[in-house]
Image (tube, rainbow, N blue to C red):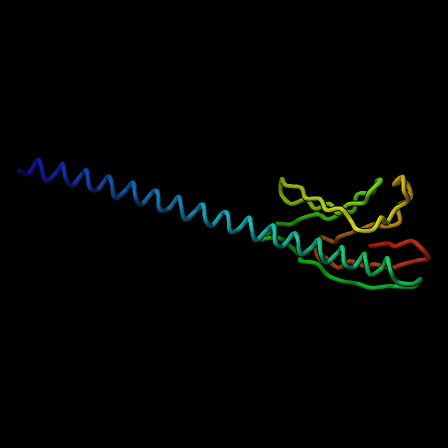
Amino acid sequence: MRAQAAAEFVLISSIMFGAMILLFMLIQSMVAKSALAQEENTIEIIFDIVENEIAIAYLMEHGYDREFSIPDDINLNEYSLDVLHGKTDELYLKISDKEYLRLLLFNISDKDGDDRLISLKNDSTDNTIRIWKVLNATRIE
């Protein structure tokens, strides 16, 4: 009788332990998906901010000058933001080992991508961006 009770205890304990492991794996998976969704949402917000500022500067007259800020980090991870010039200009964001691109609504360099009318510099301690317009050229610094 005692051997049977011990065997039942071991069996029930093993099943409960397995269920706990599966529960923890499920919770970890849900947390990871949530963190990824939050990261992608923050990246979209950053792209929207910069793209809107570029659109405003593009439509403004000579002498437009403005500073704006973007988040310092994404889920406590540092990132880099730049503008890729070519036949179409794109915002480029790199965080960890992932890269994100967004086509800009306005071309801010010439049609061949040779003349750099826009540049973007992020200070690692201060993600303030300065944007100004000189004649028909829009620049970001």
